[in-house]
Structures are given as C-alpha cells and as structure tokens.
Amino acid sequence: MRASAIIVAAGSGRRLGCDVPKAFVPLGGRPMLYYAIRALAAVKDLTEAVITLPPEMLSEGRAVVRGTGVDIPIKLTPGGSERQDSVRIALELVSAESEVVAVHDAARPFASPRLFEETIRAAYRAGGAIAAIPVSDTLKKVDSNAIVATAPRAGLYCAQTPQAFRRELLTRAHRDAIRDGIVVTDDAELVERIGARVEIVDGTPLNFKITTRDDLAIATAGGADLDEAAAELVTLAKQRDGSDNISVQLVRVRSVERVGIYRGRPYKLR
Ligand code: CTP
Ligand code: MG
Image 1 (cartoon, rainbow, N blue to C red):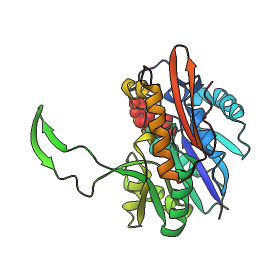
Image 2 (cartoon, rainbow, N blue to C red; image 1 turned 120 degrees about the vertical axis):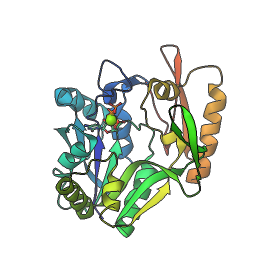
Image 3 (tube, helix red, strand yellow; image 1 turned 180 degrees about the vertical axis):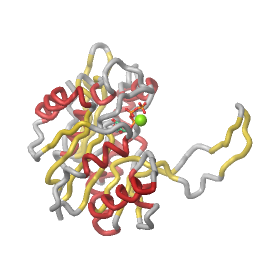
C-alpha cells in the first residue's frame, strides 16, 4: 500500500495572535511545523508529503523541511484562503499512485507516527478513519451567557487529525463540496456527507491542537512539576504503545523546559 501525507500549515493563526504565521511560531526552539514533518519520518508506507504554506513563507518552509532531515519527497505549495481550499490544492499534487492520503494539521505538533499508521491502515480497509477522543466534559448549550440545554455526551467524540482516506474518496468528497458550496473545518465531514464510512481510531489528549495562547503555554509546559509530568507521559505512552522503547527528554529552553515523547526515539528539542 502507498500513502501520502498532507500537512496543512497555511493558516495565519489569528486566534494565537503571534507576529508570524502559526506554523512558524517557535516551540521548544523549533518552528511548530518541524514536529509534524519529523513525525512523518517514522511512518510506514508513507511515500511522499505535500505541505501547504502561507504564500510568503515558501522559502522559510523549505528551510524547515531541510532541517528535519526527512528523506521522502516533500512538495510545498501556497495554501488557499480556507483550510478546505488548502487541502484541495494539496490533494491535486498528491501522486496518482497513492491509495491513501493522511491529512494533518501543522497545529498538532504532538501526533505520533503510530497515530498516522493506525489511521492510514484503517482508511485503507474502511475508506476513511480519523483520530478522535471521547468527549469528557459535560456539554452545555449557551445563549446570552446562560445555559439553555445540557447535551448528553454519550457517543460524542472530539475530532483530531491525522484524518486518512482512500485518495479517490477524498478527491470526490472535495469535488462535491465545491459543487454544493459547502465549507467545513475538517475533511471527515466532507467524506461523511457523500455517504462513505469514516471510522475513528483512538487519539489522545496529548495530540491537542494549538489554537490559543493558553494552548501554546500548555505545549511549552513550564514549572516545578515537570519531572512528574514527564513520568506520567511515559507511563501513558507505554500503556498506549505496549512498548518500553519510549523515552522523554527534558530540555531547558530559555528558562522554560519542554517535554517531548516519541515512540521508539527520544524527542529531541533543542
Ligand atoms: N490551514 C491552512 N490553510 C488555511 C487555514 C488553515 O492550511 N487557509 C491550516 C493551519 O495552518 C492549521 C490547520 O489548518 O495547521 C488548522 O487550522 P487552525 O487551527 O484554524 O489554524 P489557523 O487557521 O492558522 O488559525 P486561526 O483560525 O486562529 O486563524
Ligand atoms: Mg483557522
């Protein structure tokens, strides 16, 4: 089986509000985009990647790619005005020999190679598969600052990326969305609406999306409890992967310590 990855990194990061586009905001001394690309290196069956970038960041993006040392072919393209446009543009550059395409947000720097592999494998079998986690908070519908209803959370999941699909299915879903004037925030919805099966695979809260300053602060965890946090992360990762081959590195970056985990290798943050 041959698979391609699309990393969407063309957003501006309006809600984050930094002075560079979100994918280039430093995290542990590297641009955020670095980590998603680095994860691809360890993904089985992945033969290429396409990355969407803000048009003015193409040469910076090329430098980030070079810095990762990832050796599959990687194409860079300016993205579109909405995330959906960016995915569609990237999809046109994906090799016709790829059977499965995994779409991932650069804004989720902590996705593991294993999560890519699981979604790709499930998509190959079922048509589509996305990383997702069960909703754990109670959900309230609010109007004018007051609760008007409580939604039962049973069966509700939070969608993450990677989201993988048979290439032809995703292409058709995007084509139909254009025809019908539909704009959404994830690819699964486009595939759902053409009636195809999209399964979920177990994501993890560690694979959160960096959207706001608070998210960035969490990603750049600081403070005295870091050793404890690191031990906990290792335990969770071992349970999940069933492997002892996991390590955590704490690296001091300008008085803030960063934790990273990776299956099979230390997560080096410099
Ligand atoms: N994205 C993209 N092209 C767009 C918009 C978003 O490639 N036109 C990418 C972003 O770079 C990000 C992912 O889609 O990796 C998820 O989008 P989001 O978290 O909303 O990022 P931004 O759009 O950059 O943030 P904001 O909505 O706050 O501006
Ligand atoms: Mg956005």
